[in-house]
Image 1 (cartoon, helix red, strand yellow):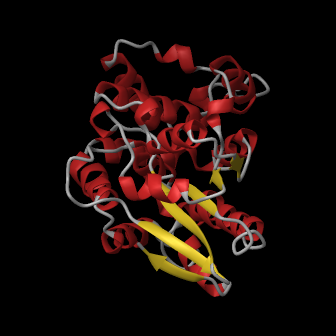
Image 2 (cartoon, helix red, strand yellow):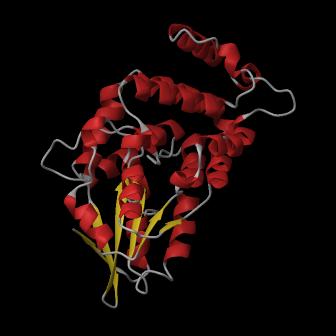
Length: 291
């Protein structure tokens, strides 16, 4: 996702979305080699009921492709299976408890937050801080009327299946869970930024969402650069959430583009800047054109 250098900023971008009720549309790119065209589309993962229905240029691109490639095809995973595979990563081990993973101040903030939601923080005693943070974000999005069912990824997958397009994955659910686990040493920073962003919706949510919705890559790039700072937290988060994954994806996709007609749909913040997919595909000699 939203994959910003800071984990909460990444989650914010990949989870938040506003209506398609504007004339502008999210950006779509064509990647071409030797006359064979593929497409690259940046997505968000949760939306509201007003955004049902993909833009026409997106459905046309899917129809023109032989295969759709997504990060993980969650449509093949039942809720029970999702829980079974995710829980080993979300739970603390060796008898550890949430309170021991956080500063006293941050634990108190969490306690107060859940109390205001009429939730006993004791429910999360055995959960890793990142899993608690994801729960917080899910609560906020649900209260605002957003759900995964209306997300762009879900709609791309559904449209592909309805039109008999094979779907491929770039990584596994376990890889994504492990990615969060690798950031566990940054737990206090994650919690602090979550509260900071929830306290300033306009700056951290609305402006960023509007940039995606209208295909404003300049604003999106500026946000990326502001977020990926040179702090230890910023550098590690960028490496784990973005750089390593982008490099893996480019290595996997490069031999296929130019031979297959692919529609590639990944979180929008994987696209910009020096480690982004757009630059990497250009560096690989592909012709990259915004449609």
